[in-house]
Length: 311
Image (tube, rainbow, N blue to C red; front, side, top):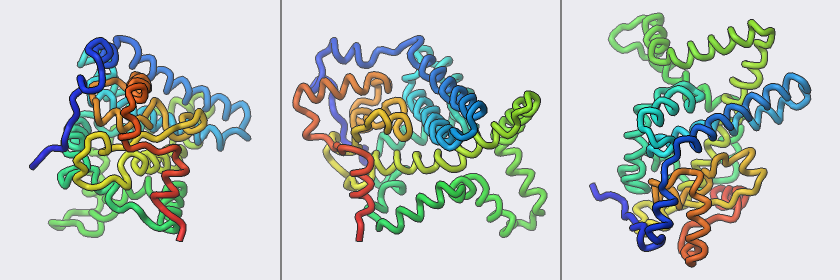
């Protein structure tokens, strides 16, 4: 299996620039994790004080749930903290809002980088279908916002196992096995409801934690996946065009693309740069005249229009 072509940093940066860009921090990643949880908490408080703001809180919290995944992604590249043990502990316990195990994610994700847009890329299935029709995209959006995507990702396989029941397993046994597999999610949410319930706000956990996870998080995750690799040629030989950077306004950063996740071309070109230094890397590349050669998009709306053109 041939790995995807790579770039060498010294073709774009001086040694001093590269050293500064790749410097690990003992506090910056932790601050971003704290910021993410603080925004979630603040949005919940606003929703409690002014219930009319709950729909906006759902959008903000769903985007920060994606933000936690973005920071977990940085940890998979050992970029969240200079101490590897702290890096992994924070990712495992504080950056997985759906409480899925962090450790299996790293080898999966590194395979994506090694074979990006190649046949062996495990994420190729996310980008290969595009372009699609506008009606197909709208159906996907509806499935995301209505909770169908969440159900499919978390529970559809359980229903399928119950229907099949290989080896004569009982439905109860199948359910128990799945409960054991997904115990972090179930226990974590049970504890959350219990703690909020003890304070008299059980509904906050449902309306402003689980609801964003079931609706806005699947949609912004889909938009992220489309933006990063859709409409990029399979087996793309140019490492400057194996992933896409999308311009993000302040509103897009608040509701779609947290923590510089939109700088995906730079991330694939230089995986050792922590997420907070990607804008700086972009500015240097722009100064050196490199960005016109990269896969770039002026905004998420423009990209979605290309990914799902009107008939």
